[in-house]
Image 1 (cartoon, rainbow, N blue to C red):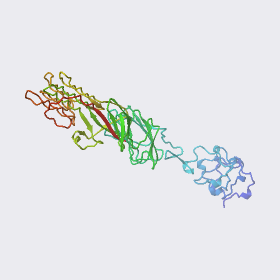
Image 2 (image 1 turned 90 degrees about the vertical axis):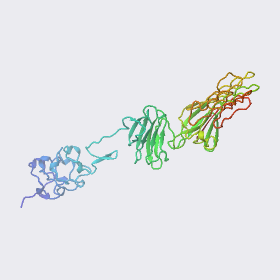
Image 3 (image 1 turned 45 degrees about the vertical axis):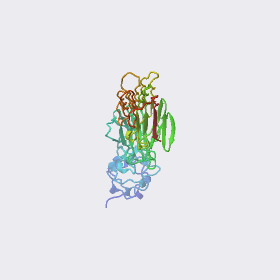
Image 4 (image 1 turned 60 degrees about the horizontal axis):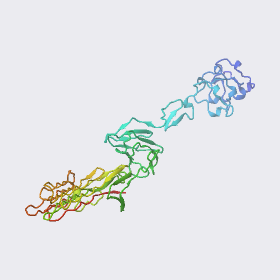
Amino acid sequence: MANRIKESNITPGAVTSDKIAPGTVSASNISPGTITGAKIAPATVEGSNIAPATITAPNIGPAAITAPLIGPAAVGAPNISPGAITTTQISPTAGIVSGQIAPGTIANDRLANNSVTINGSSVSLGGSVDISAGTDWQTVVTADGSTATTASAGEGYFIDTTSAAHTINLPSSPTQGDEVTIVDYAGTFGSNNVTVGRNGSYIDGTTNDGILATNRLNVRFVYIDATQGWKAIFDDASGNYGALYVTATGGTIATSGDYKIHTFTGDGCFVVSCAGNPSGSASVDYLVVAGGGGGGGDEVSTAGGGGGAGGFRYSASTFCSEGPGAPLANPTGISVSATTYPVTVGGGGAGGSSPKPNDGTQGSNSVFSTITSTGGGFGNGAGAPEGNAGSGGSGGGARNTSAGSGNTPPTSPSQGNPGGASSVGGPTYASGGGGGARGSTSLGVSDAGGDGANGKVVVKYYG
């Protein structure tokens, strides 16, 4: 039977490092629970005194291992059997300190908490991960009018809409705190808008896509929750990203139901402060009438030709599209931006002078945005030198010559019609009447022409 040292044969403090030959103590020489803190002199346990894997859990009494009993860096991985040291073997008040553990001894799998979570990803202790600090800016997106961008959380996008509008879709499955930043690269969002697709989530609690239509805009969208969805913050032009409506001043303003109507009877400005968006209203209808031409002067036996009506142009997306003017209606209005639109209202032409009859004068043009209605053509004077009547929005009536042409310059739909011809045959001439936007022309009668009527501009929109 092998000789064994029993606890009863060891005087407290008797076993010191100089009493133990290197490699002498092995697991087979230690009775379970024999080694306790009282039997080990301070700093006695050295790595050179312990055979590999000698110390196992059954051989160590509860809380037996304390810091004073272990020499610096004495315990190395080869000396400890897997799973040997557990919390019950270490004194909670005087246990192992860092100086007594050899570097690299404790592996991650020996630790209860051996990883950390960074940006939603688990990283093992001692491992590495790339961390994006702030916004991850992408290369400039150049809009081509057809290719959309799908945004990712945490990214920023400079968008160049110099040549075309663009669509950027927000992330489809966002979580709280996700951010997307959009910047107007070239200062052209006002002319070529950016549509922010909600991609299944709300924007400001609505089911409308956002429209970015302000130059030099810099906006960050942050996802809040399923109720409000995405919210715009740090916005250089803060506002609602749901339905927006045209807002403007200028002229005499009236309200008819949900519509605003601006009437101009003289020159002025239509000033748009909010251009709206497709979810609300983003365009306006127009009615632009030019000044009528002046009628020609008459003499005893012959009346002067009538002045032509001013050009007549309108759109019918909100105006009534029925009635005699319907064939002249443009079915689409004008898209507006937040700017000032000068309005010119054409005056009527003066009638031919008397007592010596002369031709009338041309009416003046009326202008709104891209729409110009041409002034009505003048009527021939009964005693004027031979010559044709004036052409214009609608042509002037003839005396004994050719009538003026209408729809000059041409527009589509037509802005007017030719003037009427005169009846010929002496000794009197019946001069023709001026043309109108829809009225047919006919031979004139002995009647004097007067001054042309002034024009008018009307702008109407939903809002």
